Image (cartoon, rainbow, N blue to C red; front, side, top):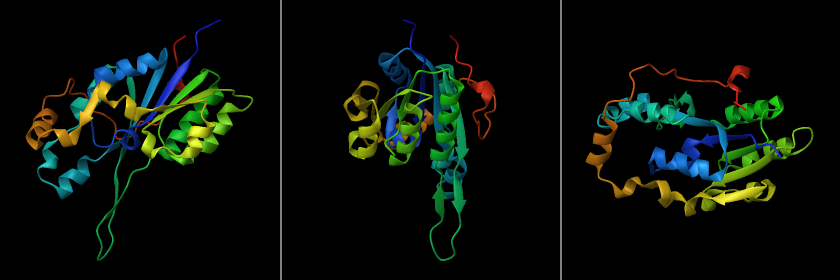
Length: 213
């Protein structure tokens, strides 16, 4: 029997809010789940918001972290946060990848190039998508990975397998609350692995579904 072809889709903000990530160890965790062929990470870019609201936060740059992700084989999809100004009220911040991820996952399923998808999200909005790609003609196995306390029951039921991420977080992370402000800022100010500019948004195209097998 040939090896399963596995694609991973990660809603980063939904899954790893307030988590200090060791990317190398996280990549090892991913590889422990299956033989991974491609990993898409959907990330929100808060840089402009930080510069606007917090002079200290503006010193932090995620560029080094993003370059490390790419170095470890993550395909990075970026979306800038949208700030909606409201008269007499605090600004409203919007940055949701659900629709973009849904389109990309469906396109990947329709490509016929994967047998299994690992979804990192606990959002119930993904239930219809999971039901769709599990059904003919796709017949794709779906594993949902998310923190148990924030995972919708609908996802637990419709997925072929559910993995409670809370049980594995100690393997590759520790909460930001356990670190000093100085430590966080100094880490973020380290020079990036590369100075190459990153695009604001990286949509998935047909040419991106080039899983090697």
